[in-house]
Length: 118
Length: 111
Image 1 (spheres, chains in turn purple, yellow):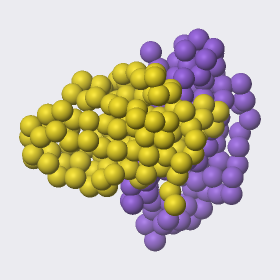
Image 2: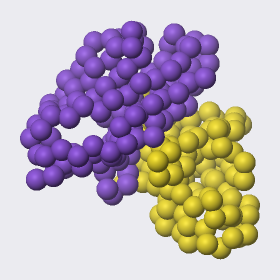
Image 3: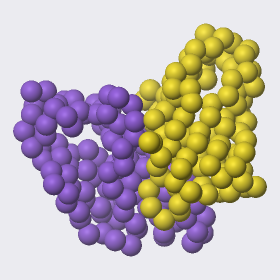
Image 4: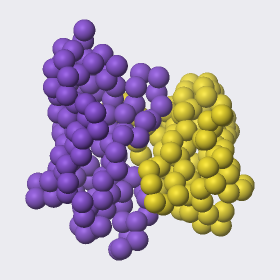
């Protein structure tokens, strides 16, 4: 069965610190997709990134970067020089595949609440 | 205008009442989903629909039913609401290629 684990329930940092949010997943599928979503205090879910299982290249987008390692089944998210506006709950998710057909059903981790203090 | 809308945004109801949460999308996607979010549990899938005639149960469908009235509309019903259905409910759509697009959420409280 597929599973996503975000072991860090809550992280607090001071502005400008770097912070890494961990995500470990379990799946027996060879084809799958991994996602990160941000949920700010206003409650909506904001898509951050989607990565397929065949693309292990790390990605950087401004202050955000993602490290995908199939060998350790991890898809970690780093925020560089954190800002107060980064305060949110961050969810990692896995897209379940039915054989080679991606069903797009998302399996979410329990989320990590990040608080960035000024 | 938002691509995925949910109504109502907030609802307080009493145990035993029937309640319907509605979701509409203008993205033209075939796939629609209903999730619930509980503190510390993340989001869990209730029902999903790949087209108007294809509706499937998710992880936690007990106590819920859905209706796909059209490609753009997917409603979630609680036939007899109970307090442990108090949660934040999200509707989402997908075109099966890119990310799921989530609505703003409906905060439901069952007293």
